[in-house]
Length: 102
Image (cartoon, rainbow, N blue to C red; front, top):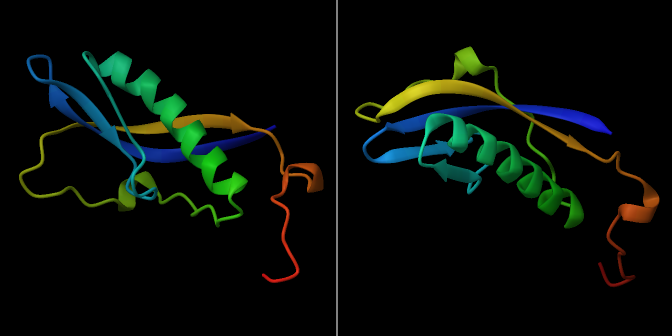
């Protein structure tokens, strides 16, 4: 198993709910009614997103340093998180099969 750690941005508040997005992983988002729920859901979202990239043979972007991420003006940023996911090590048995035409 390999540990993957990515920075994430938590937005929202207790009245509207919370969302989490990963600046390094386009389309990888999560949400929850509380900050804790959104953060826990972000772990699952991260794992599923990375598994999908790896399963399709796509490159997995390197995570940015949390301090290097610039805040978006006007965004309701509540916190910055480091989210972890453990994934199986890639092996030849788990690689997508390539055809001779590729």
